[in-house]
Image (tube, rainbow, N blue to C red; front, side):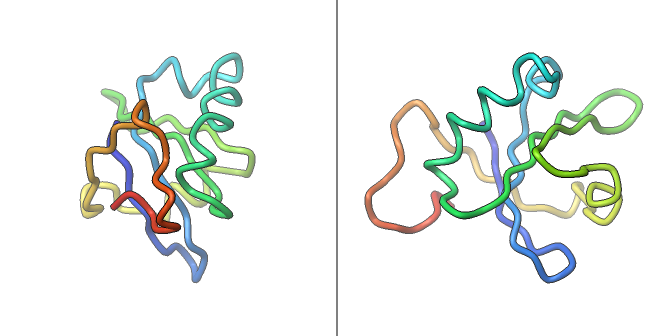
Length: 93
């Protein structure tokens, strides 16, 4: 998966690009729990790039925040989330 850590409105946020199905309420919460060790203490927003825009899932309101983020300008980095989080205390990018 590709991810990035960005500042939006003075707040640090992790964005993870996912498949559209992972932004659904049936799958999103489990994926957020799985990803949290990789982004300790950061809010995570799952984002899917769709033909007609973007689709997002998070534990917070995403629509206004997503409108502030220019995803085409975000430098996403490929991260192997199956490898397990590092113990270095640093983010994986």
